[in-house]
Image (cartoon, rainbow, N blue to C red; front, side):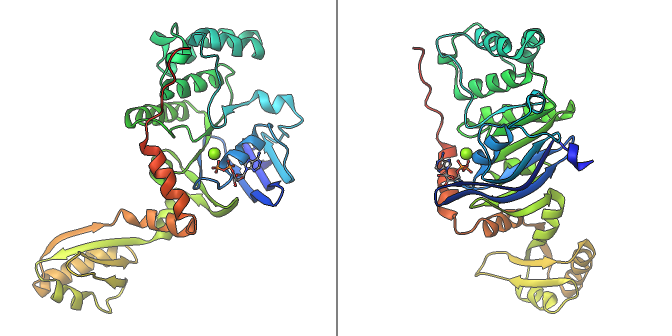
Length: 325
Ligand SMILES: Nc1ncnc2c1ncn2[C@@H]1O[C@H](COP(=O)(O)OP(=O)(O)O)[C@@H](O)[C@H]1O
Ligand SMILES: [Mg+2]
């Protein structure tokens, strides 16, 4: 059964001289998944996707797409589409002509899907304009259109929102959501936890080529634990109520910042709220701390904080648009 999974990686490894870009990666992407391959710059995301697309050969291990080796099987590649880093088009040709060239390589039926693909990525009205004048977001969406005209069962996307402005990011995420809703299996790489959280049901977190976490996002949230922020009318009293309470742990308070603690489950929080009211410390704020998952992510990818921070900064830069040539 898992032999026929859209993606099955077993011990996948790629070395470049002394650098191990991808280090013993094993994972399975199931049908209908939106699978996030999450990690900072240099974690080996692009290299992994290149092996899944059959563009480079693994040093060890294997990548299987619908049970087939993308290096050897043309049929495997007929069911998968996508691009790494950025799609490439002729800048001096318009969008639709570029897609016709892609379709010509893919055989006759692809041509008939061009209009539909352009419509889906919301580029129909700009299809007659030269790609050189497209924004980065438009080129990314044209890249997805180019993938869709092959009507693949699996879409592989390498950091599809990197370099896009906030509007472009929102459009791209909405597009991925639509494709998934229509039944397409998607695997995407990203260095943004929030993006993977929004789009994906399953995640592999990679660091220096290795998987440091793999599983359902819901499980990851549970693993991160429930961290709660608390402000009351009398935090001194509240701290006494919290101390040694069943289901409550890791109580911390820095200066005048809200108290933080971990709760075993929601029952513990419910009982706490009653105990606080009884003690006279009235609750002003009692909320799950959104930072938890992010803390876990940085913990897991720790040691590459510099790269992660750099990636964040890169994100804030808008793409320099190359003018028509
Ligand atoms: N063709 C190559 N030759 C040498 N080193 C490479 C090559 N491709 C990638 N690497 C190295 O492999 C590591 C992973 O790169 P990459 O897969 O591009 O990471 P990511 O996409 O997660 O940013 C990096 O250290 C990178 O420098
Ligand atoms: Mg990359």
